[in-house]
Amino acid sequence: MYNTERIRIQFEDFNKSHFDIAKIWEFAIDEEGENGQDETTLKPRLDLSLPDPSEGLLIIECEFESKSGKKFSGLCSPSFDNLLSNIQPYIIIENLMVMFWFGISQPDNDTKTKIYESLGETNDSLFPIKFNSVLPMADDSRLSGQIDGFMWINLSDDSIIIEK
Image 1 (cartoon, rainbow, N blue to C red):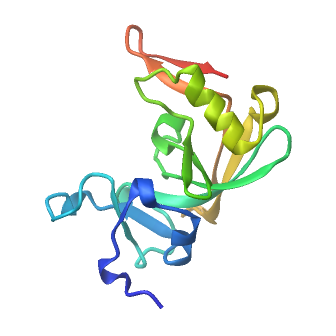
Image 2 (cartoon, helix red, strand yellow):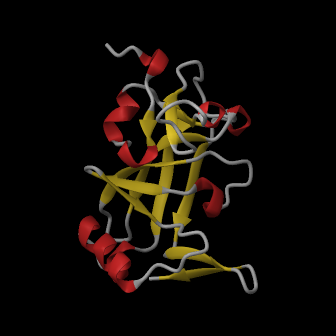
Image 3 (cartoon, rainbow, N blue to C red):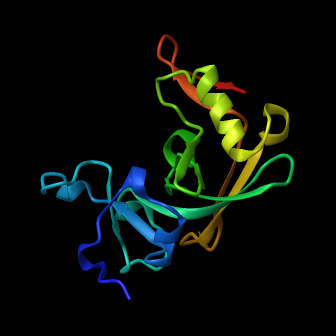
């Protein structure tokens, strides 16, 4: 068994097996100044049985299904408003984290091509992707949503751009 008291994982090193240690993880922002830790450091939250966004910036396991019916595992962050920019869904393929929200950066064609290849999909077969959390939320619902493409925000007018 794991000694979870001091387990800390960098987000980029997180993989599906970490959900075997804890079903809920939190960004350890309160520990940012500690040696080897930064804003991307995660810690297990064994004290939580249900994900509650008021407890901090959490990640939980989600199941994804592409338009073609292919199933994937990944993660999302519970949020009060359920906006994809806050939920930030990621599919995990082996040790690769596949993101769909790119913030203020427009994803280039090479990035999109690598994502399609890593998922074994095309732009016609991947989107829309539906997802649901593995754990229920406090109201017994599931965190769920749909990803229609690669998303980024256009700062000139604050519009969300979705492209395939």
